[in-house]
Image (cartoon, rainbow, N blue to C red; front, top):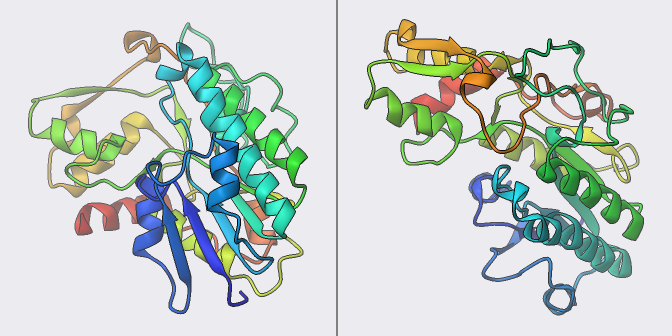
Amino acid sequence: MNAGVVFLTGAGGQLGRALLATVPDGITVRPLTSHDLDIADDAAVQRRLAALTPDDIVINCAAYTDVDGAETDREGAWAGNVHGPANLAGACAASGAWLIHISTDYVFDGPAAGAGAPTTRTEPYEPDDAATSNPPTVYGETKLAGERSAQKANPQVTIVRTAWVYTGGEHSRDFVGTMRRLSAQRDTLSVVDDQTGSPTYAYDLARGLWELATLPARDDVVGHVLHATNSGQATWWELTRAIFTDLGLDPRRVQPCTTDEFPRPAPRPAYSVLSGAAWRQAGLTPLRDWRLALDDALATQ
């Protein structure tokens, strides 16, 4: 990349911290946490990003990510996930800077798990898949609307969708970290086995995003939607058994259950695996298999 600055919004979050820990040599990063910048405040965005130049990049990791909380806090989710990306995209359009916006598998409207409904999809979602019209959750609805608001404000924005992101640290609040703690507190665990997705190690995703940001030629990525997850797929039950195995624990302590037995305020997709074909076609390195990534996550955290 040219000698610009990377402005990292949401720098205090899970992915933001992973990006800060993996900055390539020669890259200047200006981290912006939610305390530094509320992206939903357009005036604040304009002030903070007033010095953007065409050589600069904004990587937006800021979002309202409480999937269940969004069901009763539509206003908050809309502010963080729709107004925020639009504000950043507008600032980048005015300056010529490049916006890389992080989105989610929840934008797709496949069948929800539970209620006895069979999983009708088995093929990973492509970025241009037409099934992005009516996400069943407020979180997914606002993330999809945020993609569209950013694209409307700035057709040059690059959207990167990901899924099931974790770091796996003992004190982390993500799924892997939570299962680590519960493994020491309970004799057995019941984990849903009718939701299938792409477990993604935050540090692998971060390295992939840095490769994207430093591409010498951007024609195949600017203005595009890409998917970036660790390869392969698993259910939450399969992921938890793998966690136990890596920790030297008996995976038989993890019992499968259905979504109906573990209800949540927001419906979860039965299948939301994302295809990495467009990522590869853009000349980017595919993220490794999720099982290998989990091994490293649990060995280093």
